[in-house]
Length: 257
Image (cartoon, rainbow, N blue to C red):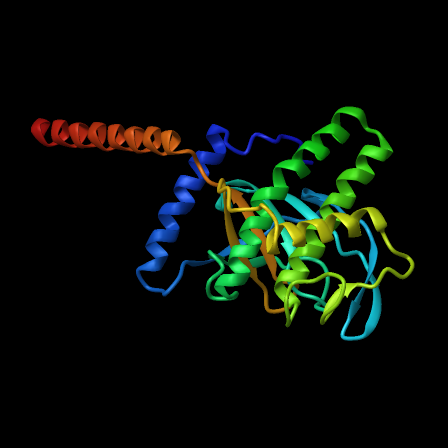
């Protein structure tokens, strides 16, 4: 289980630096970076979820909507958060996903902006709720984290699937309010959408959004940390030092021959 909330640790940043180099290399032969990444077993994740009823195209459906999963994936830079972006596709997880850095091949600029504002303004609060539960082991604190994760998932569905304007009270996908309903999570999700469409939320940064595609399983929205500029500077300085030492050793070997 992944309990650490330090997504800017040295290991994470080092792995992200490596992943960034690979992504840049991939872009030479592609319009966007796309890499096949082996996926861990579902037993290696920590998941937060809850239930509610939504209306899809006029039909009420009761689903486990709020599955926010936390993974440790070195190819993604360490701690990686996933939320589902497809409905009615085979459940479970693929053995690998085709991961694209950025969302532009899949979503409109309006959707990308909404998803960016949603994630950057909700994920810190989720981590706070998660950490409170870890420290207390309280069932009520776990419920709070699960409901918040559900609300994030509902907002993602609204942004991705709604064919009209974003509105969780009506449209092609909305909260029906019928039982079993999760009033706490539903209210949070409505607040998230309101903050995106007419409220104060702006993009705060700090995270990279990626798209994980599978031929047979549900595609995923992936969230990883963005290293701070000072961390990049340290990594580049360290890489330069390694290159310099390697060159000196190479020259020394040649001189000895």
